[in-house]
Length: 258
Image (cartoon, rainbow, N blue to C red; front, side, top):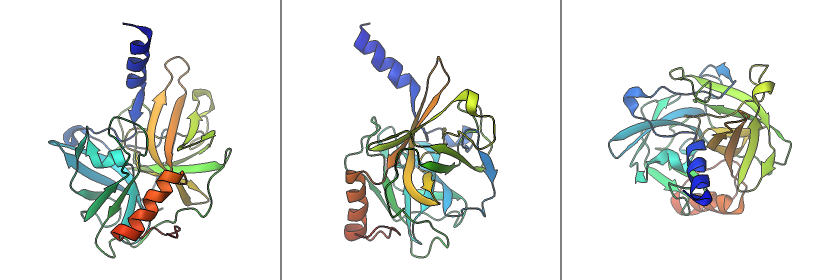
């Protein structure tokens, strides 16, 4: 095996979609690594979703941005390239409600980590609670809150249907918002937190307003450092997609003026 092939294989092993599909029968919902458990009444705009494709079911996190519109990761709307026809609310407000329309970023491909953004439209007045997209782009060193239904540890079984929150700091900004979670700095609950499997689609918040959506994670085998990547909503191609969802498909995204 040549060096290029080996590096590709290693990258493929370590890079994981935060909401990697798992069969529903064996799936437990997941929580932010080193996060603090929340009641569903706290930030009720953030919910857990269920989706199905190709004979499998999986769960992710998502956030309502108006009474009928939800944001989540594009990979939370398909399984290995097979598109889900419906998104169902599994935990949180409006449990059992099914989507009317799923819009994926047109440049998203299931085997990549780019443009991992989706807009999901539900019947009118589905959500009583929703959050706003921030009115300005995040900057490096912003302190952020992350929320989701993911694993409490990178490789540890999760607690069923539990929402958690944690905090970290943005280290790098491009089409993604990136931060790091270091083993030796996870001393206080909630601090230096990171997303894990099941958190995909959950929001990154600055002052309780949305700036990104949980997309991928990776862990260094040598240092144990976890890298979290969130789709940056303010990246030009992502923002254009969101505005198009409003003007062309009837989505309502609070905080975005098309």
